[in-house]
Length: 166
Ligand SMILES: [Zn+2]
Image (tube, rainbow, N blue to C red; front, top):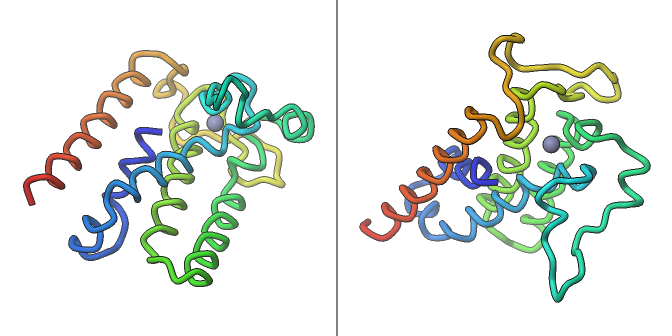
């Protein structure tokens, strides 16, 4: 999620409009970075509770798709891109929102590609692929994973800092 929020650095927009909607874009990117794991059983998104009830109960979705499958694929990223651009145009929202959502969403399978299980990027081809050779892969919650998290938090803080002083 923090990595997703950092995707706002990559949005092709003028610095001015980027900072105009800054916090919103970051929240959107961060939220969309969580979405792909709606299919995963123990992912963070399922601990999101409102008034004691789980917001994202996924028992039905989970039984249909396996984790790191379809919703982690390039196809899914394209669908999210098309849908969010369409929504932004339809409701006259800034395109930057669609960028934030899509980049945030894409950051998730990107990071999963560095972990051991691999990701079905080319779904419907079922093969699980990795982005790095075996010796560079790391486990979820291992040191590189934590470092990535720290770097992500740092990025978000940097953004906040620039946002305040500009
Ligand atoms: Zn995942």
